[in-house]
Image 1 (cartoon, rainbow, N blue to C red):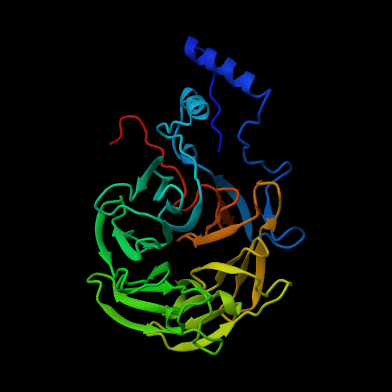
Image 2 (image 1 turned 45 degrees about the horizontal axis):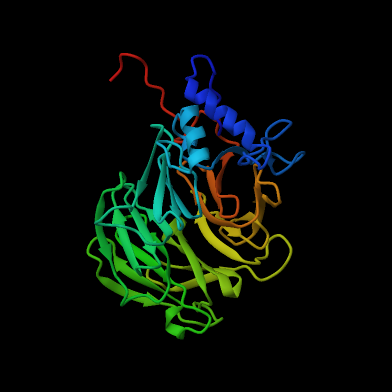
Length: 377
């Protein structure tokens, strides 16, 4: 979101910098901003079908939650220096949300970037010791808002409180080949870490490893490389749904497998294909309160929504060379918040698009900035 500011009272330095900026446009393009819908709201599915979701907003940097002075924006563009409130998302991967606070792992910045919409605050997690991150990928939060981060370079799960204070590290290099995802159960008692292995790795590396979320004690594993029920080929991500069922993206087998909390196989859905309802390159998954599964597919550059039986309900987004609302080129992360809002990460366009369920208004739910009246405490 771009905040417009007036020009009255601007300093002489600012006017000079503006002149320089105007001169630069003759030899290069300015950073592109998100295109907004030209006519009416962007709705899914398209009319005449009943609306289920509306495109609501896009996050590309800290200025989408903080007020940024125009002088600071200009200085950042001219010098490349990061200014307070003026930081962009560089290469987003995973996303999770807790009561209006959005956590995005950034593999280039090597931190988790936090967008707290209700308070209008932006900050970073994992840039100092202890708890410094090297390459954060999958992330998740528990009911209290504690953040769990899968660091593929350190082969370790790092845990922080909701405000970014480092709490502890779990597992470690002896447990993982390629750690890509971490999921915490609804009670915050167990964490489920996905080891993606590799194309030539040993079969046992394509598995889920389960740990005590508080002590880090290794509890058990399930899965191995294969194509049968309960086996994996390049697993990617996991999410808990209703009845404490665990949904796992089995990327190389083009399906979603469902297990109970103890790793017992229940069923699966999905197959490779080019039509809606099939999977091409599934990445991350999340669920809503009704038990529907939301699956990001980078081959289709969209999000497909399935009911608990694995039947396609609808899809959102489309492949496009234009980074406008609802357009994607390399989607990766997905999160569904407590109110049913959908947050979808696109790595290529370095953004997060938010879609609001039609059942609530823009002023409802956690993703609303709090208005503090003068004189209030």
